[in-house]
Image 1 (spheres, rainbow, N blue to C red):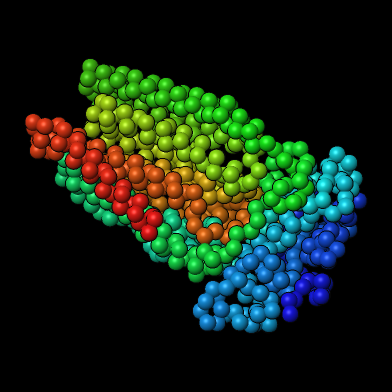
Image 2: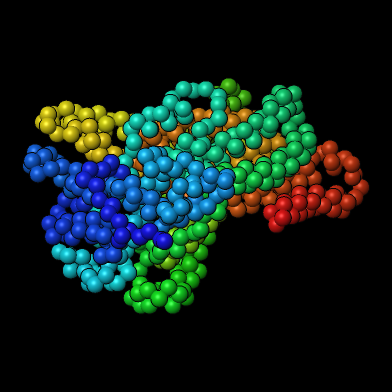
Length: 612
């Protein structure tokens, strides 16, 4: 017999706080009471049947700030039934992976009625988030106390409260004891070891664990390139044209590593249960708006927005804007080449050591300008993609990734292609690649990790001084933790992290044959990146909600596309080399045919492995 929530009592007088809800300071009391009742009400009455209490009691509210912070938790039984509702997949005693059901709970490995560790904390917080997001309006026409915040049957209350500014934020709490154990095994001791990917998954969820798994795999995949590149760089340093062997290895390497990753990723996600987990029905984005109507697929009442209007916005506004940005990027690139010509002319006239250092200045300035342009364009791309009014979060992300990747690719690599295939200056190509790669890595480390960490430390010290002045009867530990975490920056997802690896993969796979040290610098950067990203996740940003993932998503396609471009680029560089040209002194047609055939073979093999 199927066990339902309405048939069981899931109430507990005390609970472990898992999630924090912060309301705006001026929220009306009737709104607070209504929200509380909806959260604690039974499922059959339209509630979430969760546990809910304010962070501060009545006396503490009179003496302390931050009065509108509330803690949300759930009983163990409620979490198990929630695990069944979201379709979590767990390992059974017979070693198979199946969707968890409460009725067959004893068939699952590690389950015991007295064991509270069957569900990870990340899974518990994901369940609570799912239940809060599925709190839906029934017969309410508006949020009590806010007539302008309209509701309709089936509308997600949490999303409406967030877009109305009534709820400021919802975030999961850290478990300080579990976090300390994770830090000790992850990054506090700087040693060369594998990352605890399963522990990361247990604490942060599959999406974060897959990123760190991919970062670790990509770093180890770079080591053969670095090992070959070091002696190649040392012994063939002055002869810029002897890159054929390294380019041939580069061509094979960039194709093979992604296929090996796909198999390793599938093994991980099968073990975690997300590979076979059924996808949840995707709700409309919080920012999606339109005229209220009936969705012909779901039968629910929700905002509807004509597809042709979205297409008009994409093709008449977004596309021209992206093209304008690409043109501006090329214009800045030509300014860079003018600066290079000026620095070279100055050096040739004087020949001093000072002017030899000056030769690197244009590349450094250009690298900094590229990073600034990438970040400014990112904000514009987010605004445009939001303005296009995509209904689903997945569609929003796909359009955003496409916009950002196209611009970043041209902005970062156009100058290198121009030097390689128009100017055909391998010395300048080596210098530009080295400067762009190293400068971008240093800037990313400072902007993404060191600066946020320093700011967070300053704020942490301020919070500690406030807490030390509190009354003795206040639960200072929990109060300090919640207040500190609510002021932390919000982790916006793995987008920027994957983008950094994507550009690094481009630098190494496209042109490292003329600068073999590129892979070695990438390895060194990634060893520090693992630790700085881990520090960022644990100490700089709020804990993100766990999100089940079966792969790295659209980034797999992005890396595979870069791999194909790398094959074509390396084949073209091989065809341009003096060694290959010497084999065909008479007929250039034969050379072109061989280069094209060399491009087709790995690309066809790559396609066949994806389809198989």
